[in-house]
Amino acid sequence: RRPEGLTSVPDVSTMVDPGSGAVDRAIFTDRTVYDTEMRRIFARSWLFLAHRDQFHKPGDFFQTFMGEDPIIVTMDKQKRIRAYLNSCRHRGARVCRADEGQAKAFTCTYHGWSFGLDGSLISVPNSGGYPETFQREDWGLVEVPNVQEYHGLIFGNWDPDAMSLEEDLGDMRWYLDAMLDRDPEGTVVVGGVMKWVLHGNWKLAAEQFATDWYHVNMSHASALQVLSPTGQGPKKEIAERTGRQFHNDHGHAHGFPVHPKNRFDAKTVHQWYDYDALRERLGDSRVEGPLTNGHGTVFPNFSYLPINGSIRVWHPKGPDRMEVWAWTILDRSMPEEVREAQRLYNLRTFGPSGIFEQDDGENWSECQAIAHGFMTNTTPLNYQMGIGSDREEPGYPGTTSELLSDSAGRAFYRRWAELMRTPAWHEQA
Ligand code: FES
Ligand code: FE
Image 1 (cartoon, rainbow, N blue to C red):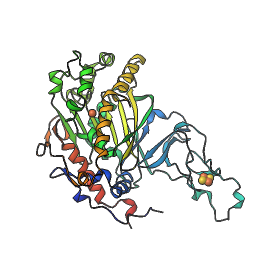
Image 2: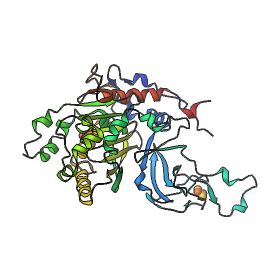
Image 3: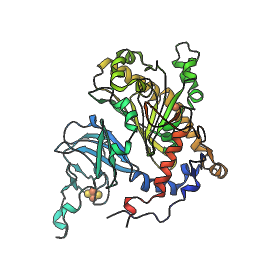
Image 4: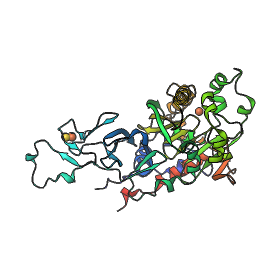
């Protein structure tokens, strides 16, 4: 049975105008907008679930969310990664309450229905009380129909007719590979999944990672000063760095400074890398740009920082709140001490108390806190930087523009508005 369609859908064309670069703050606060996002964006986009390295043997599981729906990701007996709605078919309780672990089956703690690793209902206590029409095979866990992997990143999509993950990513793969394909051995997860709550709409974080390099010198001034070797603030070439941002028409985006001496700030890591080999493998333009710097967003709510090996999901928790879930992923061939140096570097900069992460979270909470006023909520915001500067250039796939630009932000909201306007698979007759 398909979920019911919306009874009323907000007219987003009056809220977002990527052409003129105006965005209405109601998109960050309005409950109907948020409910529509759940149905028309999160119910049909590729959403990040977990990293492949979290699953080694059948029964390994990890619990996450797709939108606000709780999801169990697990490895079945055939070693296939599968994902299920974590809600018992009896009265709806979660059948798995642990964040992650190992299980032979998922048993609901309410009345004891039990589900196998393939999602089927395998045991029902006191089943003699049910009529003959009760068939266990009708009451298995709801399975996410599409689960696909890209270089170790596992994504799920509820849309049975969704285009493949690779097709959806398109040109974005070239930029993502700067993090995921540095090492022929792939990536591993180091440390646990860090989780924290922020006051702020999920889009504030997702769009910033897609498009915003304008905030860096101002918002992160103190962090840049701490990191600078002289203690005097960023070196001139950092403060005035140029670069690019990329976007494609699926709303995926990546921004990065370009500099021939772009390097990891963590010395141990920088010394370990063989830059000549990396240039050979990934090309000069990637090594001087996205590989060693930058951040990006896979639409709608997965973001990453190649320099840190930080990947994160901005889980929506109502219009005003998000939960950040962050993993550190590193090259599999990295020796232990280099891994540890990189893990600590990531923790200090973009962990929950990281010197950069704190600045960003503070900005989003600040913007959200005042967004509910009548006048603030009806006064449009400016996303005009770089209008008219989009270009195609050799060496960089897709559409690019200057580093300091709202171009990828406009692309993010163009995609957002397109999906918000179009009925999804579950609304078709
Ligand atoms: Fe799960 Fe009743 S709610 S067994
Ligand atoms: Fe920032």
